[in-house]
Image (tube, rainbow, N blue to C red; front, side, top):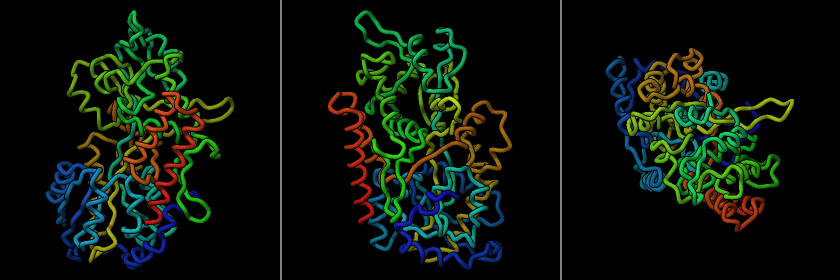
Length: 436
């Protein structure tokens, strides 16, 4: 386990020790001899999928679970959760994405390594799951993963004489020249790529974060004192500036890669209409794309990567939205709740969940089996190299990143200054969270 994972969550150790103790004596008591408690779970995961999943478990298991699930909009979850805890009416567990968990670390109980050894956890789940670990235990049990990938329009590529999809970002210069077209007035009619704006580019936060993380910049980390800090600054050990410069060039009319502007339809609409050659979306968006335009001739491919320098190797990465089940520290029966969550995350059930959602599994054992499905095979590759970060608030980070991008594209600030200012604002948000 890396140094980063060991110090992750360090600021909250004092709050979490009690939660660790609650599990230290649990060694996996058979649920067949222990009455399982009724468990209430709140989360941002889709309720229809989760409830169907629980029903499937209860229909096939000799030890059914009693689970009441409440879905809450991501924009309201933190407020509702904190308010309920203050009233003493909070849930027993939560099911939220990994990049929403940072503000709630002090409210969660750790699963100790006496209960689930660190090596077992690391061997069982894809690498992104290690964001749930620290030196004292496990914050959440991985539940599902939804990686960012690239959808590409075969007809547009074929018409341009391009046989296959790009594997590296720098390939888009030539692709743009062959696919992007403008009318007599210079208006873009067909585009190879939609980047450079946060107002009409779907998943802009996730795309830009992928570009940043591909450089080796983790976006947030912890300093030697255990304080969470941001690496979104031009002077960081690995500067995010190249990622911002690449992202923003596509809306610059003077750039050879100009292919997008905020006056155009949003990127998903343009792709569905056959006017955008590539669309960067989550794996879960596949069914929507198919349903909205059954005649669209498209395929899925891994997210392009930064080309490695001569003589060096590439470390692939892309953002993925991972959901995990966490135990709330105030629950009356943490050991019982853990037993229920253990049932909900049994490998055979998680495998069935991934298949029902048409997504990759969080389990290495399932991915290692391979897949003959042409889409799942792509999703599996993306899941193995997936990453996320401990975010103060996805809504606020989206706004910060969007403001940095707008400052650059409008010429209000140089990319260096825009990143410095944005990093300072994001750092302040992180410090305010730590002071809560």
